[in-house]
Image (cartoon, rainbow, N blue to C red; front, side, top):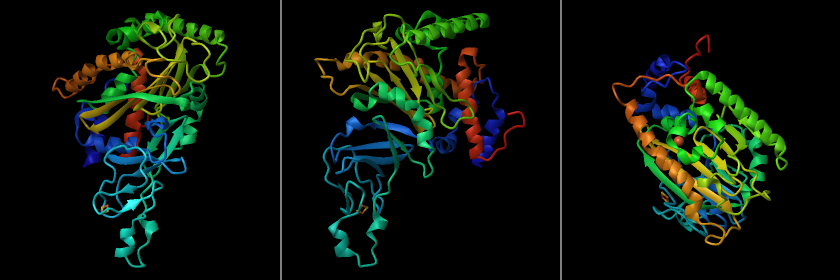
Length: 422
Ligand code: FES
Ligand code: FE
């Protein structure tokens, strides 16, 4: 039944246009979407949030609750937050300095390494009880320069192959030696694809985000905002030329400039990683371009550039020489998303002395507030009887790429053959 509905939507999809409404509004689409998304890896935090043994972070990913914990040996592990006895949730919230996990239902306990160890077991069970069969179930976890990533699939994608190209830049920006200074989350009434399509859309930026627009040179935005194809091509050519001149002038990072990764519809993860110049004189991606925290990583001065990246369709990482910002889209229902923003600065920076939290967070707080109504209005539009998939502009070609990536993966889920021409 599910595949019939999805097949009908796939048949209605026309590349170059928006998705048919049901891809956003049909309650049945979420289960298929989760099947598409779960094999990938998602950012759930940073190691600075659990610095000491026994520190835990309870996170939620595609309906699964997972405990991320630093063990007595200092290693970070992840376990499904499900008791091996009768399945109660074990940890309700993140905590500091736990010695063990204790289930609130019948007090079974587990070591920080996930081994069942309660004395109650010895009293109640006979020799046939196999403790090893009752340890906590581990969840796939990897650390990427301090970023904690999870996959809640039994067969996740190849992490090393996916993120090795990110390592050099993340290391240069000192992400492993950063600390989280603020996490801000809120929900919106929208489908997750509404948000993905917004986050990779340069066409709306000069219209919706005036301060963001000022952080890039006019040619960059002329390419996004022009209404005539010839102007778009001319502005894009000029922006490309400016990028080349900037790369040639760089001495600090000779090998990691420009477009490092740009996945398309045929790639597994839909990643992208781009390093490009800010407006001349802008030290950081902030309102007015001033630096708001000490330089991170290997920077000795700002090189007036920033990094934009996506590790998957839902998780973005933007980095300036003095701070980094992570954005996570988490689908809660077909019509509800959780949007989380995480800000990081160098771990040695002192609040109040070296940086002001509100000042660091001001820029992307404003961008979030500007985008929020757009997400909800766009979703409401998709639920209207008047909705028709609109034609994508040339500057929205990356949205078209994402939609083809998504539909291709959905086809694989429901085993629908590709059309001959695809
Ligand atoms: Fe956890 Fe019984 S369900 S101890
Ligand atoms: Fe936006």
